[in-house]
Length: 152
Image (cartoon, rainbow, N blue to C red):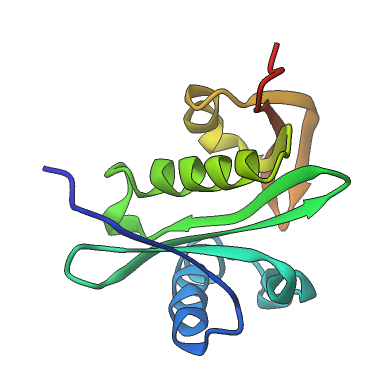
């Protein structure tokens, strides 16, 4: 049975949310995937819209961030704690960000997807473009999704 997720769009300036998002990203990226700490934290966090997903019991389990550049929405730092993967939290975050981007008129969404997660993004309509590249020692592909009225 899938949990009833509590989803929250938030900012880095909300310190309780920031603490939860840092904990999730630290566990997923720095500890589990061995991303160097200096590569995980950057100035974009202050500028992004963040998504924080809590389990129905209140436990923070997933986070991602969204920023806009040249009328393209960029989703990044998608992280779901290991024990909560494949239960729908990642899909919920993506769909929430896609709805948000669409309401403000953005027509294209980009994500640098880890190669191992490409099928997940493909199922939600993203298409890989270009060649595989390395980001923090992890293979990635840039993926795009056209949203809005003209997504031919």
